[in-house]
Each structure stands twice: as structure tokens, then as C-alpha cells.
Image (cartoon, rainbow, N blue to C red):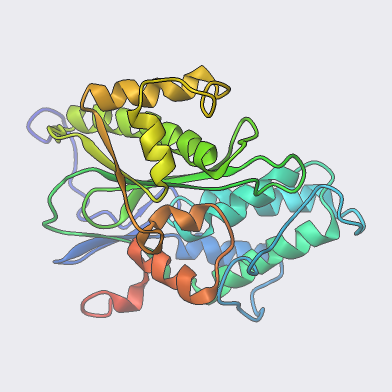
Length: 302
């Protein structure tokens, strides 16, 4: 770039738009420790007691829960800040997305849940996402869903994550646009959303010179959803599914993706669909590449 443009080399990147960058011989580590500290100060939780997970197991939130209304402005600031923090913290993606559903007329319970997420951030303030050097740049995706996870309208929650051999670099937790009548249908709709993301990522990677020659593996833990995607015959189990979700079949036939089965135990997208127990949560968090800066080689301080 210096041969083409007049520019000054300022050395290795350390900060960019609120993101901290640590570069070692073995990996690149992205974090938002400074931003997280600012949040805790802003919302009066600087010296709060930390918790091990962002949400309690089986935590269910609804629009009407019997508690009093909370300060809507403060709640929106809190949730908005948490959503920005998900840039390097996929481990709080589901919690932040869940809280964002209640921006209008939040209750004291919603506010308490948001504060719990900040207490989790307090205990994991040194955490970020690590990308290991030397990994083969092969795009792999995971997709999952939580059937009828919403208490208000019984819609399911889709989650997906993509990596290039090490830490995740694209993830989402989204409430589905329609009610699924079965777990297979919910998983099928989740796989369709992940397929759309996979096709876009393949296009972007080809622009970067990392063209994906082989079909992108998309790992799903529901065999019925895989069977529906590979069977072009419409029948009573699939005829009611919105047509826009069936484009997954074209992607399979065109060799752009390959929908494969994986065990639920190794399904990384599970962390984006529902609250998990501590052991399960910590296992998936590490598998996504979210670790503490202390775990880097040479114990680099953030």
C-alpha cells in the first residue's frame, strides 16, 4: 500500500473504534476491556460481585411478568452498550439479543437481567477472541435453534457461527420471523438463515483472495432438518414452510454449502439459542475462541 499511496507506518495496530488488538507470534487477540470498564463505571457496577454465566439456566423473559416498569432510557442505554460489546464477545450475544426484545416498556425483571449480564462482564473483563496464526482458511459454519423459546409469541430462536479454522468471526442470535410447528422446522429455518450468511461470506472471502473451492460445511444437530433440505419432494411436513427458506436446496445443489450432521455436544451455535449451565457454557465459549488475555502465550497483559 505504501508503494501506491502516500502514508506513514505507525507500527502495529493497538486500538481501533473501541477495540483493543494484541498481536503475538502465535495469534491476534481482539478485546474491548477499556469499553467494558467504561460501561461498568457508567452504570454503577464497577465493584459488583461477578457471576459465572450471563443468564441463569432456563431463564425466561416475557413482556408482562408482573413486576414494575423500569427506567426505559437507562435500560436502552444498557442494552445498546451490551450489543456493541458483542463485537468481540459472542458469549453474550444471546443475552444481549434477548434483552433487546424488550426495549419498549422494560420491567424491573428485565433491568435485573441486564445488570446480571454486566456482572458477568465484570468477571470476564480480560476476555476477548483469539485468532490463531497458520490455520487453513476453510469456512465452517454451525447452526442451531431453540424451539418455541419466546414466551410471548412462541417463536423459535436461531443461532449460527462461522470460523476459518480458529476463533469465530461471524455469529448471530435471531428470533425467527414465524412460528415453527416442530423442532425439525425450527432447525430447517435456522439452517436457511445460516446458508444465506455462508453464501455472503463466501462472496466476501473471494474478494479477499480466499476463495472457497469446496462447499462450505454447515453443521446441524437435527437429522430431520437435513433430510428435508436434501429431499426436493414437497409433502405435508414442509408444504406450510415459507418458500424463502427453501433456497437452501439450491445452495446444496449448486455446491455452495454441504449440510452435515454433528452431535449436540459439539454444536457451537447452541450458545446463541438459550441459557446454558456453567460447564456447558464455558466449554462452548472456549470453542468459539473466547479466552482470557492471561491464557495467551507469554501472558500478555491487556
